[in-house]
Structure formats: C-alpha cells, structure tokens
Length: 89
Image 1 (cartoon, rainbow, N blue to C red):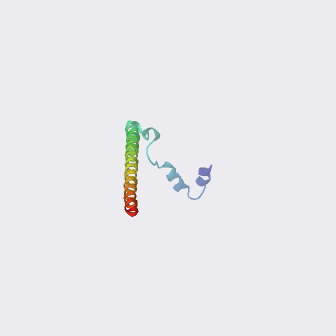
Image 2 (image 1 turned 135 degrees about the vertical axis):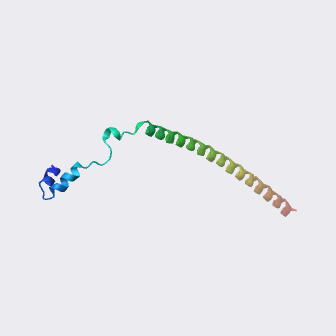
C-alpha cells in the first residue's frame, strides 16, 4: 500500500531503484549454522563454570572472614580479661 503511493509520486525512479537493491544475504544464506551453535554452547558452558568457580571462591572467602572475626573476638576478650585482672589488683 505504501509502496504504491510512493510509486505514483514524482520520485518514482528513486523508489524503484531502492526496491531493486538487495541489502544483506538471502534468507537461506543467513542461517547461523554449526559454528554459531558451537560458539553459543561454548559461551554457555564457560559462563556456568565461571559462576560455579566464583560461588566456591565467595564461600571460602566468607568462611575465612568469619574465622578471622571469631579470632579477633577471642583476642579482644582475652585482652579485656587481662585488663580486668590488672585493674582488680
């Protein structure tokens, strides 16, 4: 409908020229193919391994932070206990 209106306009040769130009490959040539599938599957697998590795890293980091916090609390309690004994004497 829109092309018919443009074809009857004074710029009809320009419109016909635009209709005959082909931009990009044909549909049967534009299929992804096995290389595209391989790249997609590879990226998915790599992403899964990266997520799993990062989860393990964060889990170990949280355990280390909790352990260091417990050691710091124990050291602070020991230091406070030593000061209390010194002030009682």
